[in-house]
Length: 441
Ligand code: S3P
Image 1: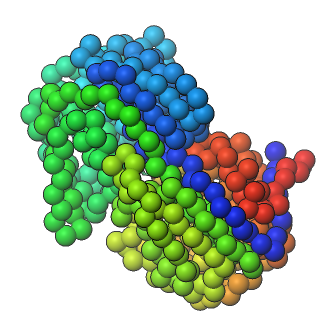
Image 2: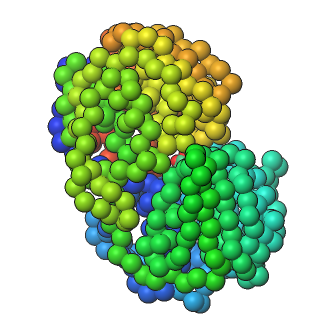
């Protein structure tokens, strides 16, 4: 079904950010592994996270919804995971599937991992290769993809590993496997990626060592540690809030306050890039949650200038390139993104999807091997296009935000997948003043 976003004069209001997707997955996983009964509040109830909850239940944890965004999880503790009687279905979620491959690896359990068409095309070799070095065996589809059958083992061996790609999913997968391995598992990443697994593992009682050396980061975990039940409040998601922030920046009259956002240098690249481009961004400390700092952030209309995005910012804004492309389309001058070839293996080939999204709306953009170059419209974006989302939630939300300030409406071919990461997106942006509706096609 086609959805259309029409230009509006203002985007204003105050909203609480939805729970962070990365932290929500991790809270369910660690609560499910711990000894005792954990409670989670502010859980993102998006499809990706709910699938992780169902998977933990299939492996023996008890996972129960006790209120709005509130969940109770009785962990498997010392008894460990049990072999599931059903396939483990991760839907659209690369994070859920890759993290859980690491979890299952450390138990003598056989499980079949499956997902939707998009997930079944995404590379799993990046986690299967190091996991096989640790002793795991698997039978995967061609090109090391899902569906795949994984057999974990109780005598997993610790390894030292340098992932070829900057990936928090790979790091987290190996940390979770390392929790049950013999010896100390060590991962050295050339650029630090999101560190929520490290923080949350510590919160659940594990000893995790982190060491920075310039841009590089080494983390290690000793096998055989136990986790203990916790109460976790999930902080607000800076990736979801980026859509609200962008809507305010490109609006003729924008003024948005987002409350309870996680502030973490491994996630704030979009906000730093937007500030470099001239967006006034306000931030006020309001406390902590799940080992993370919390802030309220304010955004307003801005005369943006194009910028060359520093390569060092790429890992900390890896999910925000579709919405960065939208603000760059409204900016004056050229925006250059390099060193972002990982975008080719996200929920879609995001470089191609971003290029097509802008071109069909009259914006000049050039595709490069590892990024793109945008000639901004100096405040004016023609719009009027129908964007192919390729079943990618972040392309869908970015295109709808572009429509709020373009000269003509912007449509997308499908909006159902937005529920994977931000089920309240339509309600939130409409509350801020967006005019979005479904139009039969
Ligand atoms: C995530 C890591 C990132 C990110 C994804 C969430 C995580 O993927 O794109 O949306 O929660 O660990 P990579 O690790 O592949 O970069």
